[in-house]
Length: 319
Ligand SMILES: [Zn+2]
Image (cartoon, rainbow, N blue to C red; front, side, top):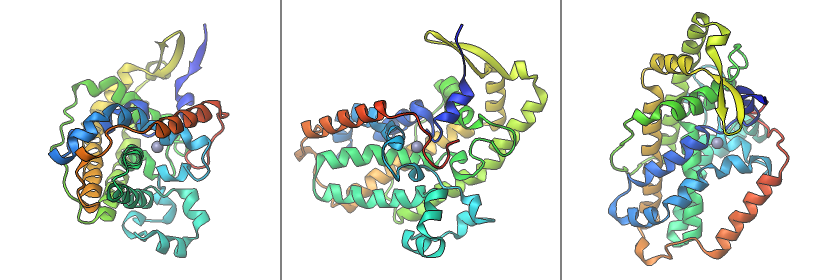
C-alpha cells in the first residue's frame, strides 16, 4: 500500500491559496457578478477563466519573480504594519529595498499593477490580454483573501501546526463548500482599487489569529489518530486531516471560509468591472470572443514547461 502524507504534499506546493478547487470556483463565481455589458463575453470564456485560474501557481517554478506575487507577510514589518505599509510600490521600495519586499511578498502591490494592465488591455480591446490578465488577476485577488497568505507563519510552521495552510484553504472548502451560499450580488466600481485590495489584506490578517488558535484548541482535544486519517485518492491512500477534525474546525471557524470565498468572488468581480469602466467600457460584443490560436499555443507551451519543471520550492511561502 502506498502511503503519502497529504499535509506534507501541500507544504511542498505551498502558496496554492484556495487550492485548485477554490481558485477555479472563485473565477467562475466572479463572472456572475458582472453587468450586462460584460457578462456575455466573460460567460463565453468561463471555461478559460476557470481552467487558467490556477496558472499563476503552476508557473511559480518556471517564472522568476512569480512567487512573491501571491502573498504578503505583513508581520515581518512589525505591529499593525498592514495599516502602515506604503500603498505605492515605489514608496515601499524606497523604504525597504526591493529585495526585502520580494522576500516577504507583494500581493497587494501586484494586484494594483494588474489592475493597470487589465485597464490598458480593455483600452486596446485586446481579447487575449483581457482574458489572460482577468484569469491571473482573479487568482491574485483571491490569494489576498486567504488569512495565511498574510503571515510569516503561513503554514503554522512556527507554532507546531504544520499543514494548517492546506487544511484551511483546500481541505475545508473541498469537503464542506457544497452547502455554502456564495451568491455575492453585483460587481461594484472601486473608486480606490489600491485601498480595496489593502482592505482585503487587512481583513485577512485580522483572521489569522482565529485560524491558528482554533486549530490549536481542537488539537488539544483530539488524539493524533483522530486528528488524521487515511483516505483513498484515486489509486493512492493518503494521510489527511480526518473528516471529524475538519468538520469540528470548520464549525469553530463559524462560517469564516464561506465568508472569505464570498468576499473574494465579489472582489474579483469588482476589479474586473473597474478595469472595464476605466478602460472606457468598450463594447465587448465587438471583440473577438475567443482567445486566438497564438494565445492557445502560448498556454500549451507554458503548461508543458510547468509540467516538465522539477518540483523545486520557489522562494517565499515554500519550505
Ligand atoms: Zn497563489
